[in-house]
Image 1 (spheres, rainbow, N blue to C red):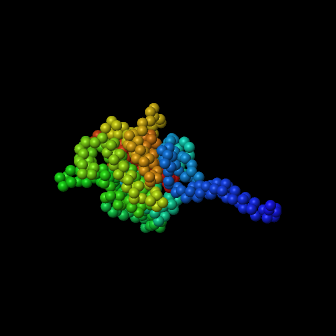
Image 2 (image 1 turned 90 degrees about the vertical axis):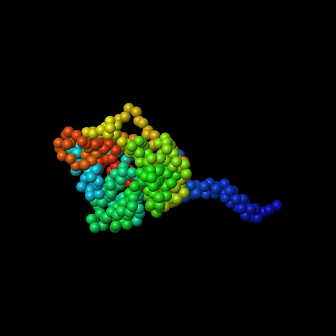
Image 3 (image 1 turned 45 degrees about the vertical axis):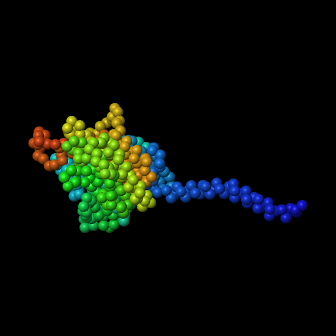
Length: 387
């Protein structure tokens, strides 16, 4: 029989073994969880569909804030810049073009569950230091690019900013920050080519001619929807091609799903989520019923909808993003923007005298793009908050 003093080392060994195999695994698992949560990149969304709109508002915690649900609030402190911004296209400078009202510039979006910080130009440029952000899409995305450039350019000395052009892209450079805010024209994302017979082919499974410009960009913001809904004389292609197969007729939303899937595959295969953030902005609604005159003389946002309709392109987009491996953030601006029928240029997309304004003769009404300052500034406040 062992003496009490001789049995003590054995008891200590048994106690240590018990601690190692019972308590330590729990501690190790907890430690791993903490490491993983801290290593999670702030832009990575969860796989759950309901978690697509996740935003990390504090360094160590996730907070769900659905920016898309809220209301428009009138705020006299807006706009954040004026229509003299030198980077605005004539078509969106509605005040310069003779629009008599300006209340459309003074609405901000207030989400129900949180708030979107007021745009801070220096803060945004600080986040963009030594980075490239590229907005990719159609003329509505160009609209948003001009807004973003105007939001930041006022704090940069004249000789420390410039715009450069490279094929289908343009870039605003903030030289002291070594940052660029870029726009790339790709309204369909996939490739649209003209044949020798002048027939236009939309290649649903080809994207590299456009995508090669996206490599090396730190933050990519995409949109693509409007051009897919064009038909007849407004269509930009004569037929589709998939592989070697020519398709003369296809449901537009089936084509859209195929084109988006090509984009999604490229992102999944070519981008690293630790180096590149990807955001897809949902479609901007048009108020162009009644042959484009639905937004004419509108002075206030719509107060409410009796029935909220989710556009089919948004449903298709959500489905494609959900199936991706790469964490893409869906910036849903569709419903919030649908309230803003007052924000379009309408007839004020070009300068005109008072007599033409009153009679409305010989005018067209643009109910697709947005006056600036205006609605896209709020999209960019949201974008800044996401970053």
